[in-house]
Image (cartoon, rainbow, N blue to C red; front, side, top):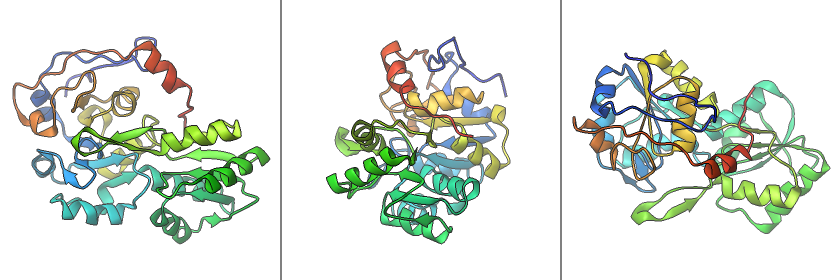
Length: 291
């Protein structure tokens, strides 16, 4: 495979791609790392071309998603209902990885988990010590039941000295009919404002952990793997940091096609783009490193 497109130009979020046809990158790719929301699905509907793309790369792809609501097993069942047959072992989720990271690196730590019932059950099954007070860590994920009381509880734990671990910093993800769905990043903004405490760590993209885990599960090399996503701040920036080509779909700057269906068209190209300095400053205000 040719050298990956894109790279740093001084600003880590300034990424450009040459005008290589998207079909050319896919033809040379041995593996794919594919985003979920906005790339393969929008809420309760599969996006055009998703099933065909996954079938074409059957056994050679992994989904890497900042999703923190579901478990891989539950998400695999949901995707099956949408016509996408994806093994749970090929689904890498920010919520699950955040739990695993705490269990492995801080065994026995007291954790206040703000998240979905599914993630709560997953955490308990993995041996995470969940508490309501005197926490050493606050783990923030997407919580559909987020309330003033939960915000106050988490904010006061942080002010008392707990460290804040967020699954991801996305403010929204795409919903049907052009709507947006508030994400963990929106909750994170409220928690930071209330507590005055910045996140100690953010697990999800563009940090490398999800990409690296996807590569590990596939036994893949970055230079022979193409990332497909819809977000230049997470998918493209994260791919570039690891030297992987990225094809964007949707309506973001640099998108090569309106949907993944367009990636299979030979005329799909990859225009150059550059993230604005204002967008870069917003993203740099959130720490995204992982150990």
